[in-house]
Image 1 (cartoon, rainbow, N blue to C red):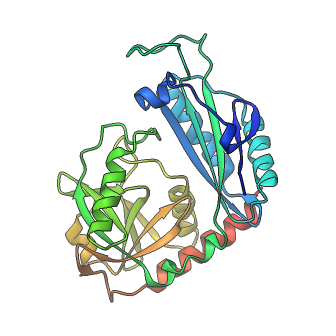
Image 2 (image 1 turned 45 degrees about the horizontal axis):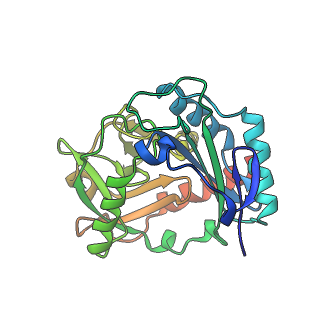
Length: 286
């Protein structure tokens, strides 16, 4: 079935949606994005994604293409038009097409490009990997210094995904100055006793929407949260480990660089955190 996509206010068959070769998203990776999950036909943590989109746009001095209300209406219409029960909606905003290539930003006379499309993922919350856990490897973090802005500059994360694939594991964790920053498309955590340890917010990591919710739920469940860097060696000696993202939700990590974390199986704490997250997000979905 041909998807219906959104492009600058129009709903079009995916085969008819076109963006100029002079769009700065294509030429300069001058764009930002968000991915919102859909469960049971409803949007998960939509307000959080809107807030982070606004922050990314603001950090790049890029104009918002429309209001949050219009974005919500468009997301819901795409869910309806594509009959999505479980899946994701990808949103991308670029600085638009100034008519020619130039390193300097164009002025406000250039309209941003807004693209949205759905990805159908039946049973998204029932990923069997949640019962077996991920295995990860560590790789040097050579990305740019503003990882907190959710830009479309994803070449090195893609390379790191391929490194993981070549190693026959599930993902890579970036390491800089001896400590873990984050995963290729997710935030990273370890658990020691009743304490969750994860890197503090800064320019070095993405300010994850799922991260914020999970840490809030963990605190409400009387777990300690310590925001600081941790090493690969600490992760290997932890009781449990996990990642969070908008599409994987809470995903256990059972091996780091070939060394089992804890018992090498999915632990009770991560399992419960995933259950709590999905229960609360389904309750709050719009």
